[in-house]
Length: 314
Image (tube, rainbow, N blue to C red; front, side):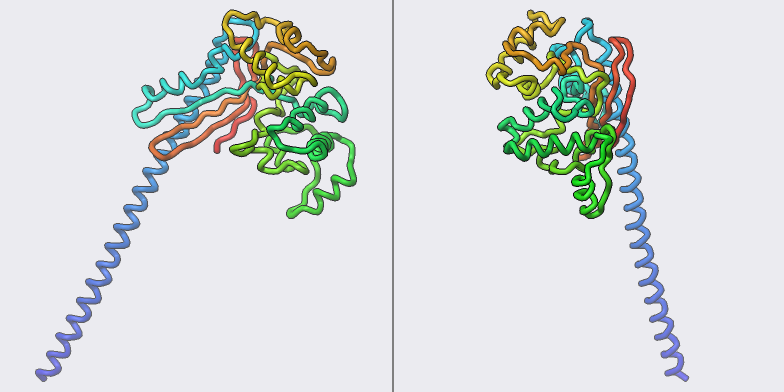
């Protein structure tokens, strides 16, 4: 009888120990799960904050585009110096800030105006053949031809076969480019060419899918674009042009300054202007080691209003 009682006590003790072990495991798991939920909630909260900080930078940049006092656009305007406003954003938020910049799309090559052997085609070819890209003439020509074929409504059996051989296969668009990222789908354009490297420029920085009449603003075009406008515009001359147009005392109200300095004939198919319509805004919200970027294309109407055309959140 005594042994039976001892056995029952032993079984009870083991049962209690098992129950305690199970409870401890449950408590530990609940604690881990609760902490994970807290961390997730904090990350979601920070993500929302970052989005609104980035949006603030985007809309602030758009507002700056309407402050120009001239009826022409230059690199001397406030929108070309967003780093000052970005620095001031640290005073607007308790635990974050934004870094915003604006790029003038009217200062880039309008890809949808490129037709085989027209002025914009030759300009694109001159850009690709600049030594900074490190492309030989054949590869540069192949890329220019592939872009023309991609946007052309005419079928190209050779290109059709190439795109069909890819994994996964797809068809060439045979229509205007809607966003510049489409270049990554075009034959011959590698990520290195599109994004650039530490040693080489990014093709995406010098071309645009957004343009009405294809006019290029010589007041804001990057120096590599100035060099691409005509044969004979050397890097040294482009540097002098850039110095001239950033000098506050020089008249940039028309394209005459550029034509005088170029000293060469510009292809009549290339439209030149000093007015810009499309701009790209890139705004990154930052908090500690977290960041969120919003980018988009806006269209400016005079100096009064700005309309968002495209919007992307990375």
